[in-house]
Amino acid sequence: MRQRIITGIIFTVLVLSFFLPAYFWPVTAVVMSVIIGVCVCIEMYRALKHGGYRPSRSLLCIGMGLATLVMVCGLVFNLKVENTMALYLIIVCMYSVSCGINLPLVRPNDDKSFLNGMFTGGMVFYISFPLFCLDCAMLFLPHGWFYMVIGLFAPWATDTFAYFTGVAFGKHKIVPHISPKKTWEGCIGGSIFCAVAVTVYSCLVIYKVDNIEMGMVRYGIIMFLLGILISVMSQLGDWFCSVIKRRTGIKDFSNIFPGHGGMLDRFDSAFFTLPTALLLALIANNLF
Image 1: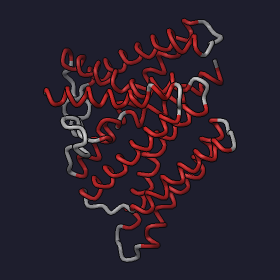
Image 2: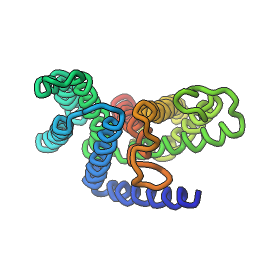
Image 3: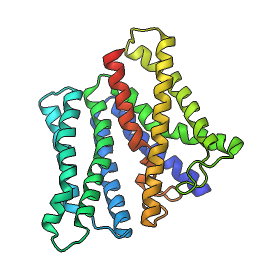
Image 4: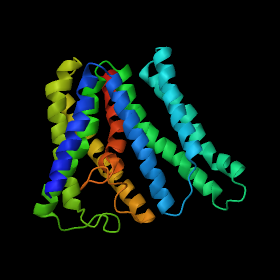
C-alpha cells in the first residue's frame, strides 16, 4: 500500500508538471501526448503478443505518424478544430480499416494476418484518437485547457467515488466476468458524484471563462447530464482494458509505475473521457 501511495503521488506530480504549463504553452500537452502514445503503443503491442497475436509494428508506426501529420497540417494551415478532426477521421480511420488488408499483403503465409491487421488498425485508432482530441482542444480551442481538466480528472473522480460508494453500499455485481469487484451501486454512485463535480467546476470556472450566454441553472443541468455521460465513458474505458488484459492473460500492461501498472493502466479511462471532453467543449463553443 505504501508503494502504491508513493507511486500515485509521483505519477500525479509528473502529469501536473506537463499539464499545468500547457495552460501557457500548449505544446507541453503535445509533448505529454507523444510520451503517453509511445508508452501505450509498446504496452499494447506486448500485451497482444503475449495473447498470441502478431500486430504489425511498422503499420502501427505509420498510423501514428499519419495522426501526427494531420495535427501538423492543422497548425500549418490554421484549420478550425472541426476541420482538423474531420481530416483526422477521414485519413486515420480509412488507414486503420485498410490495415485489415494491408497486413495480408505482406504476410501471405500468416493464417491470422487479417485478424492481426484489424488489431493493428484498432490500436492505431484507439491510441491516437484520444491523444489527438487532447491536442486539438489545447491547440485549436480558445479555452480548451479548462475542458481537458475534465477529461483528465473525471476518471479519478469517478473511480474515487465509485470505490467509496461500492464499499458502503455495493451488493450487486455489474460485470463479474470482467471486473469482479465492480458493483451497480458503486458505478451509479461514481457517476452521480462525478457529474456533481463536473457541474460545480463548469459553473464556477467554465461558465465565467467562456462567457456562457444562458442561465446558470439551465447550464448546470446540461453539464450534470454531460457529467453523467463522461463518467459512464470513464467506466467503459476501464472495462475495455480489463477485457484486453483478461483475454491476453496479463495482470498489468507493464510495471512502469510500481503498484499501479503501466501507462495504459493509468490512462485507460482517460482514453474514453478525453474525446468526450472535447465533445463537451465543442457543444459549449457552438451551442451556448
